Image (cartoon, rainbow, N blue to C red; front, side, top):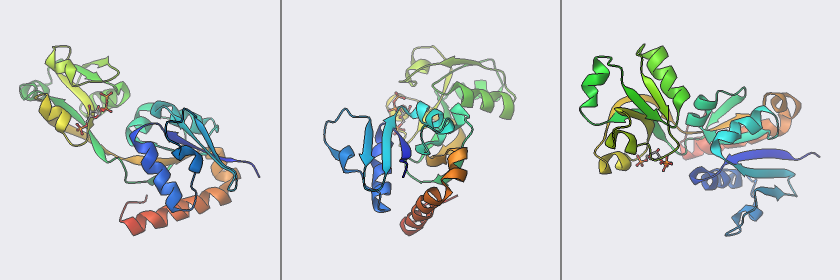
Length: 219
Ligand code: PRP
């Protein structure tokens, strides 16, 4: 039997994702070894392999079929816009994509002033301002610590993820507009969905049942 390959986004969500797989009977002991630098982990008995990739790359691996399944944030899916099936909302990593800034920026947003928007998500920001709000803005791509941008005058507002809100609070910024709620999603390669349907649907059914039990959401 060929391995079923599952791509996970490295970082906070990887551990929670593995807990879900373990709960449906697909554990991967190899991955639990502390301090490992390994990237690919195998469950020989079940013929399943997991790998950890940068979140932005997970949709790419799944679209090309290098992974049959993946778990990745909705933020990354929206930003990358890859061709794949989004099959489950796992309900983990819940947060919101928001327009944030100092209170004064509220007026500028309201009057559709030509403002600068700093973000790690230029695709999402562009879609929101251009297609939903019909507002012309200048989008500046950054790679992290986005909250800095309005504080040092790089941009009037930011488009960023808000989870607890503490990063905003500690830096004197507010949520000005909410763009979209986010959470981790399970995605499936479009060809694998047909050619490996039985194995994949067994996993999906088990995951759906687990989420129902936990009171999570399934789409
Ligand atoms: C994310 C996001 C915010 C923060 C929000 O950053 O970009 O900065 O978390 O979380 P909070 O509302 O709970 O404070 P992350 O830590 O992923 O790092 P980054 O600065 O590299 O984006």
